[in-house]
Image 1 (cartoon, protein in one colour):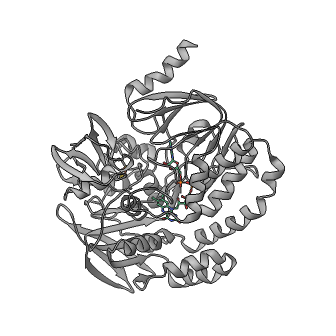
Image 2: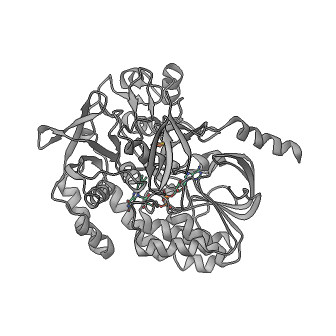
Image 3: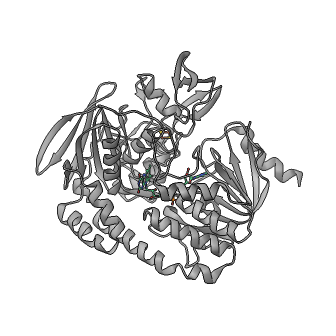
Length: 423
Length: 78
Ligand SMILES: Cc1cc2nc3c(=O)[nH]c(=O)nc-3n(C[C@H](O)[C@H](O)[C@H](O)COP(=O)(O)OP(=O)(O)OC[C@H]3O[C@@H](n4cnc5c(N)ncnc54)[C@H](O)[C@@H]3O)c2cc1C
Ligand code: FES
């Protein structure tokens, strides 16, 4: 059914979002043999996730077509990197098999995930991430006629609202925590990026409420309503779905396993998108959230640098700076204000997997102590959701990741060891 | 169209549909149950939270990152 997994390559790219696809094109154009490993069922990453309910923008379609036809490219979709067992080697797992792949150079394009903060009722079916709801819709979920509330922070809320509208869902609330002044400042600043200004106008929505606070989700065995506070007034709004998100967090776990240094936004890189570890590059939102345009140009620079095409890479640095400035605007205007985050209630679950409440965690001074005492972060998601939440709630440094990076089968894990013994 | 079963019930859905969307199409989107037996459904939609884990043809898989296939047998987990 599946082609066999490749054993080695010159350039191994993890992630087939905008950054990974742009990088693969740039490197393959200069004759490199490229393997791309991607957890999604099809290339496109988070923004251009394929599915029965998606019409990708033309530019995305063109990039995907070019990417899929690249000579010298091996794409492994629905494949996850679970460990870096030795220098120059990654362990990957698919539904029916696993394998190790050796590389000369490695490029991390692992993207970002949503920051999902706990609030009462957030475990009820019907509550999802905002990008999460978009991803589910792209995968074929129908929301036609459903009452949908969207709350949290960031431009992804507006993108989610546009998707809901296009799918004939009924938007009943669109609550952003940032104040009007910040949003207005952001929009006014957009004249420097005309494409983004046009996008902002297209996404504008009459239900958009600034300075709003998500209070709780209500329901017995499924979501029935959401409570939102706006202008000092709390309103209960009946709904079938609540999509929430509070910005993005870079996926840095694999980079950390490899020993790459981080900064406060994500994986630390230099002007060539090289990380602190020799031969390992990073591009796109794993180096800090910044949108698809920045991911594309960073990906191209990284692909060129990995192919030793430094002058060509340098020629793109002005474009990168332009989109980095846009990313900085986003970060500034959508900064989270703790007074408008959901209220802290002792009974709210923070760790959804091990069912640990906020009250159980509050007594501790750091993540490690909290984890030892409560099993917080020791469940199936390995703290991906709750560690980002406790970083926001308590300022705790997230724990260093440990292999396997996601739950894996024993036979896959044994493979790393056995391959080593055979050599 | 693709045929699959969810806890033994037949479903027919368009190609390219995710197992997470198939759960919702069955009329009950829960994928697993928490310690007290309350339902949990897909949450992050992108392979991070593990809330959507189900059993697909005998293996533990994430519903949100897996596409339906002809003859696939999906079971909700505890
Ligand atoms: C859920 C979600 C929805 C979004 N929707 C939109 C939108 O509609 N519009 C918009 O403008 N922006 C959206 N964004 C922002 C979007 O992430 C960026 O604009 C853009 O996709 C970033 O590109 P990237 O290449 O850096 O990473 P991504 O597009 O995130 O691609 C990263 C890829 O790496 C893969 N990956 C990560 N770790 C591993 C691993 N260990 N093994 C194998 N593969 C791995 C992932 O499966 C993914 O395919 C969304 C973000 C999220 C988190
Ligand atoms: S919904 Fe989060 S992992 Fe599938």
